Amino acid sequence: KLKWHIDFLLVHQNSKLLKAIAFSSSKRTECKISKFFEKRADGTIARFGSTDCKSGCKGHLHFFRTKRKLNATLNELRIKLKLQDMLT
Image (cartoon, rainbow, N blue to C red; front, side, top):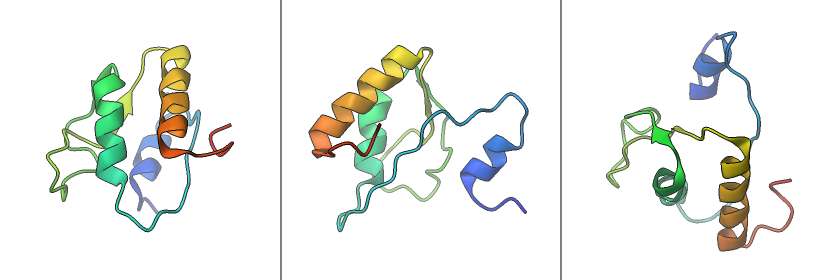
């Protein structure tokens, strides 16, 4: 059964999960993190995962053309959020 956004992506044979980030926070950070990615990504899938967004996000699914750029962005996010080794 398809329920979560990731479920709809992973049913396609050309989709591949490269990394997942999980952390807990007492603050609502989804849009803040999405905007961080939006500024650095090569593109954003319009409205994907953000139909109820009230922060003006273009979407909550972003893509990077290279793993190098993705990893640099993840490392920058790790430093910004002071996440120790949670992104490795």
